[in-house]
Image 1 (cartoon, one colour):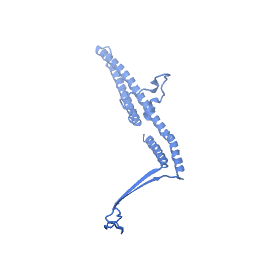
Image 2 (image 1 turned 30 degrees about the vertical axis):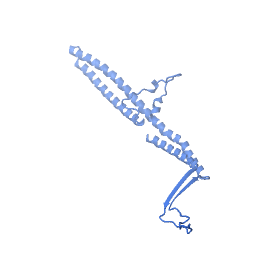
Image 3 (image 1 turned 180 degrees about the vertical axis):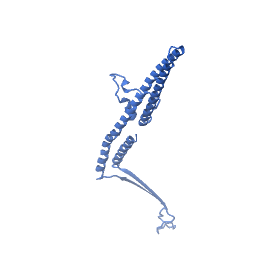
Image 4 (image 1 turned 90 degrees about the vertical axis):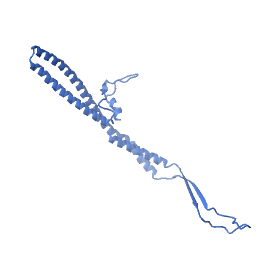
Length: 220
């Protein structure tokens, strides 16, 4: 959900600013270097008996500097640190609101998809039963033991049930697509949804799973 990601990013940015503020108190090492070459340099008048200058400055020089910088007093640090700490303390509460709303939406989509799937299964059983009745009715009509209207009534009932099953399938796909968008694609149309009340935890002291336990990991 974009709302959750935005608040998470803001919390991460505040944490980075806090670490940067703490790092500013540490000493920093500064190294500088400079090299230069002169085509001509002044010469000293003092010479040896052969006429060579006693001192000849070099034409190429290299200068190196090493320094350490550290802030001893920073009157703005405490207010800035307090503001960042307040943002970090507020972040969980700000994040909880959209997360709870997101989980509620995911819960509604989950149970809507589960209810539609259960209705599909119920309708499939009823359709199968009517198909068997239709076969018997057609056999009776062929034997002259029943009127054709009996078979037509069963066919009309089957048609209505098939339409209801198509509507339930459409509702299930819509709910699953909504749940998939809320969970970042963790749920697809091929996913088998299990009602949380039917889940059992394993190990010592196994107990019935929470109603929302199956959704928590999906929308976290």
